[in-house]
Length: 290
Image (cartoon, rainbow, N blue to C red; front, side, top):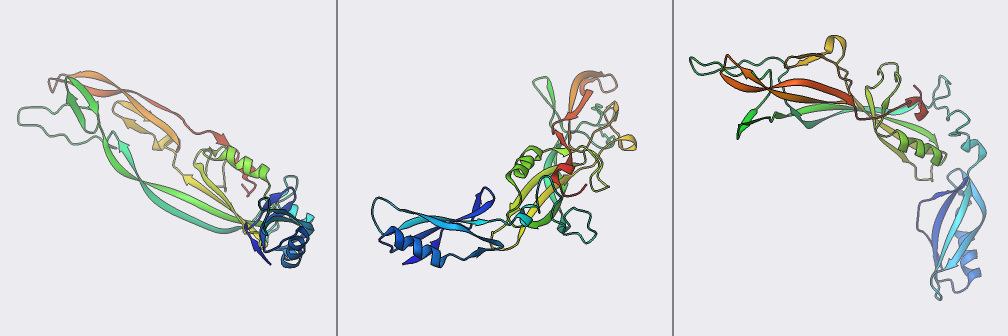
């Protein structure tokens, strides 16, 4: 007879549940006793809770599928209790977890740039004046219609990743639900004492643990952006003083205007629209400090 683990473990209530397979056991008692003898008395930090449950695979045969519960100690449950403080890994004892690791990465993404950052230098044949498109890039004329095609540029994106440690198996599903609600939102209040509201976008979250150790890791990744406000406000054509927060979306409305100096009609920005495309959330609800 042999007992083989088929999963690393999951949750059932306040217990860790592992699944196993018993082979070469003709009777129920054979499978049960073999499982009791083979399974460890403690799974990581959780002691075995009761006897294993076994069920024959198919209507006949010598294979049995089973589960065994391991009770999570109450002191471990408090390590990530919604009504209590998180496990204190911080020597300062301020009831928030210490950051195990922190990393910053940069990735370059392609984005469409429709206007120069500064007025371009225009050149035209002798005796002629180049049309003034107010900084628009790659204006094309086809069938009497003008379009601003812009150009693809590489835009660096800065991401911050933080990893925290908790007692194994104690992050509740209610917290996972909180993460689901917060993914894709920006910080509604200053975070880490540096990032003003709206500068961070919660990009990803991950929980890892193999249930054999005493540690479960929570990984959070944020996309860092920069606001264009105040002295950093910018212009698009004759539309001036545009302000835009890091993760807001901007688009431009154009109109056709006669350029008397060039003797032609040009397509110029008539209005610029900036608005939110991501919701906000209180990053304090991540329960990893603020």
